Length: 157
Image 1 (spheres, rainbow, N blue to C red):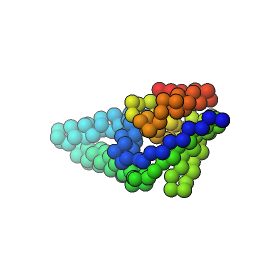
Image 2 (image 1 turned 135 degrees about the vertical axis):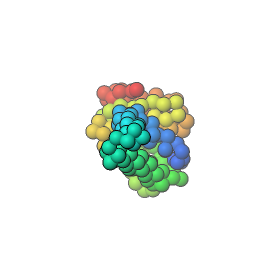
Image 3 (image 1 turned 120 degrees about the horizontal axis):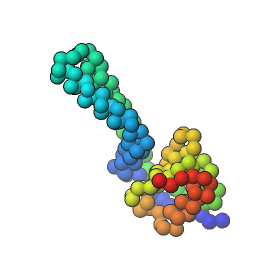
Image 4 (image 1 turned 45 degrees about the vertical axis):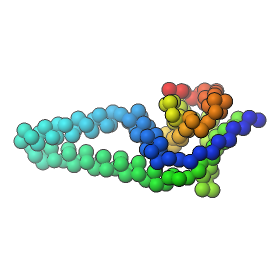
């Protein structure tokens, strides 16, 4: 049975970049909609139209930005400086850190988003996503991962 094992330490900047990419590529419509609300709210405030409604739009936007930033910070602090062990084998992918083990069966991976420096793996039910740093895996490991995802009906983007 083929087994590939890799160790790496999460870097907060790398993790932040992964979360922003996941958010903007997967939920870009929300961000664009928020930008439109902010622009119309500011425009309405400048023009003197219904200040309460414009203020509400700006307030919602500020709250959303805070929520987004707070979510990113919570991930950063949870994984900062942690060593992650990844094992890839015929049946599943295992992530291990701080004595916690997460096993991801290949048939549960819906798709992989490939970026030059990282791959993001997403589950079929949307319950998880995983980050694979490309620089930490060799070409054989990346090809193995890609073959397993495609072999179980997943997509590569």
